[in-house]
Length: 292
Image (cartoon, rainbow, N blue to C red; front, side, top):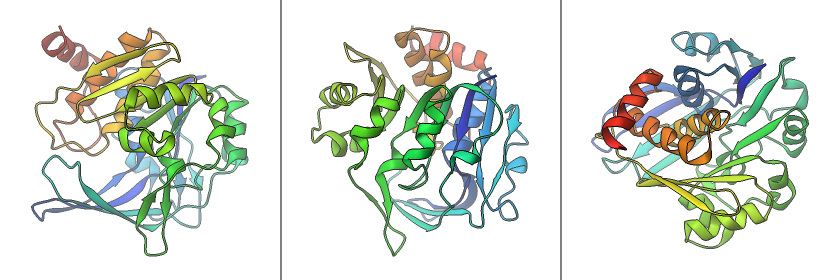
């Protein structure tokens, strides 16, 4: 029994920064979330899908504290090109040049978890039948990015409303969106109103991230915690790290405690490029310094 089973593809990312610097790294929600959740002391399994001849998931997680890698083979893999236009990496253009085959219920390993964390990249990664299979096993945490980013023929990604939201949201115990996704889903740019609406439509708890704070709605009230990074060089993977931290901490803590820990975790992570490789104590020290 794992605390969390994080499901999604590892990406091969070609990042072009605002000043012209380029890097080739492995990314994807499963990478950033897996490293973070395991680093802060939780029992973590990951289920990456892709062409293992191109992206070796065991190599990607070799430097992490993830307990088990359940690799799922695909004839294809996911490749992304991200061009950032500002120093804070808030404005970017993403091209999805290659993608994996959709997950199937049979891709779920013969193992159990308290939370099934779905971190996809584009619409189609997680068909309804796959979400249902996860929900039949335990609580589901869904990053809605994997339901709302649609790939156009030229590789550009377009944020669209989620057609199946009313059908699938009742299966979701924990939902994560960013501010833009929440507005597209609900039609309001008021993050608090959007969070309440998503709870009304069936989600148990809604986490909405923003570059200044993260908020959580449980259907009755709003909780919030500020973000206070001292640098932004590790901006990529911010949302994935926040969600992973929140999900794992909610297993043992109330909403305000879990949210504060997740906010501090991602603030610290944003100071260094790549996935979080610190310790739980590093996060606790950060909370004492900046949140007390």
